[in-house]
Length: 327
Image (cartoon, rainbow, N blue to C red):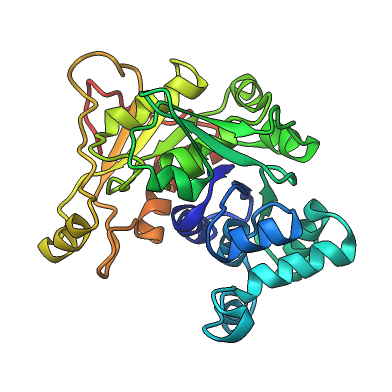
């Protein structure tokens, strides 16, 4: 079971479907920028964009259909809108319910597994900054340029749906990330009762670390800073596992990201005892191209080798502790 949003979540799902059809993705719906933000405001609905990406990542359809669903208009009144976002909006109005429209799309796109919106309500993210100020909305949070202390959902509380609760009870493990820490990973964990439900399931909780920092959100963050931020929101015993990139990033890619204010996330968990007991898996996860993103197949393979395959055999996953070796 995976929690998150954005391109990182979609890449993870695209890789996982090579190994198992039993995937449930709980996807953030708080994006207030671009096509999703416009539709969110115009139709008073949850943001569809991250859902669209995850649905297509798990879809079993002709590649042309996937291309059509991801098509973005470049002209006229539809400029900037993605066809898939418009389709979700229309479908929600036809069936009369946002959650039901996503269930219908799971069927129409023959999704391998299930994609579920974190909530069907129109909710916003509010960031609390160390100086006492606040920023509301994903776009505004990133543009504020201020460090983030905590994130909350408004209006609150956001109830945990029965569909998500049942999926948690049936899950073999829980994956968080990769993706924007404060605007993709943390928001799902703020749903009322979800952290307790995950804890009660007693399954491995796995955080997939980002390869690069995100300007305006995790500036200067090392891997340990990401974990501390997660723990501020969900408790001190989170997570059980960390999967992190350990490899070189090509100079031309580093230069590109440096111009945007991003840098590699430094792997720094071992040494001070703060994170003792966490199982650590490190590999070179960098994909090809000029973007510092995880290779979907490589990431999924690591998850399969270290977690899914042992679980399928009824064997507890190996305990590769921080003070021991990392693979």
